[in-house]
Structure formats: C-alpha cells, structure tokens
Image 1 (cartoon, one colour):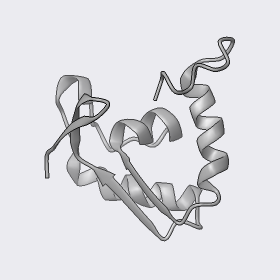
Image 2 (cartoon, one colour; image 1 turned 120 degrees about the vertical axis):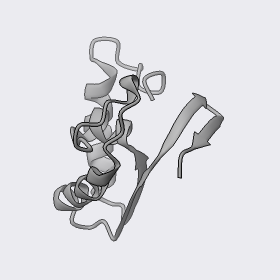
Image 3 (cartoon, rainbow, N blue to C red; image 1 turned 60 degrees about the vertical axis):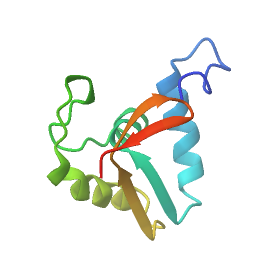
Image 4 (cartoon, one colour; image 1 turned 30 degrees about the vertical axis):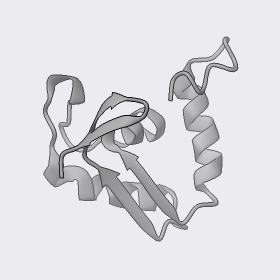
Length: 95
C-alpha cells in the first residue's frame, strides 16, 4: 500500500492511507483486510500482534473487527485475513 500512496511526497503514506480509506470506508458495507492494514491505516490493533516478530494474537481479531464496525457502523461484514505476503501477487494463507 505504501507505493500506492506516494502521490503527495510531503505527507507520510500511512497518513494519506488513513485519510483516503476513512472517506471510502464510510460508503462500504463489507471490509476485508489483514491485521497490518487495520493497524497501519485505521489504528486498530489485534491485541498484542507483532507481525514482524511473527506473533499473532488471533483470539483478539474479533475485537478488532468489532472496533472497525464501531468506527464504521455501515459495515455489515468485516473479515480479518491471516496471510503472509510473499509479494504483491502471492500470499500464503494461515487459516
């Protein structure tokens, strides 16, 4: 996502992502993302998850999904995926 949001060099990509995605999410009723996107873009964390250390707090993912719905009440469905990004087009799914 960082490459996608480099159109304003004066601002951090995560700041741009949060602003743009917040506007878009207000109109969506289904949200699918991984825990890293939810944390980086929305500031919503899945417990003590640290993807760089390989620690996933999977039991806390439902709480993160509920927090997304709390921020965007129009959401009818929220899915937090468990996947490892190998490249932009290749993912390895955990569950």
